[in-house]
Length: 240
Image 1: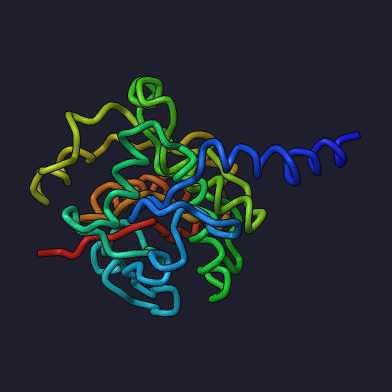
Image 2: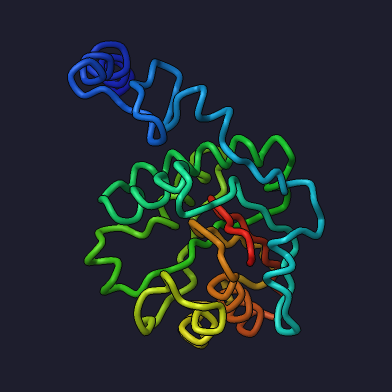
């Protein structure tokens, strides 16, 4: 019975809903055609990709250098400039009640990264956590939604072994030093024994200075000395 119901939704109801409520490209606003997701073909091809999947030491590694942890592999899908039209993807996802954008971004990221064997050997996806009160107010954690999209493609399970204490305000518009202080000591590890010997992939929406991901990585390494940590984000800014 389940398959006929799925076929009904796929073959009849979904096309009808597309006519009544057409999906629009999150960059240019064009109506998406069947086969397109999140972005129209033009905007998808024009996306400012960073192509870091095959680079063993790149700008993201440089931002996450630490004597207290080591990042095995690191990548981000596209370059983030706040005034750029592609920034709307991230901003709409975070601030306009659009968790679906996170899941769709995760699917795009997974399909591109998987073609470079980026997920080889990775056991778990760990989204960067939000404090429970902030997540309750927003209704979702955008990093977790991205991780769910990646999991849908790769089959790698999403874990929730990281937890966050409240930050002292938002990271937006803070200097590098202030971002570092704002995230210092707020991340801790739940049930570290379950991560022993695992290769985990930290998932976040945007990396700027790297303070959030670095403190997550350091918390993981401190709690689980034999862990391997990699990083994947939807976007990355350029350091000035």
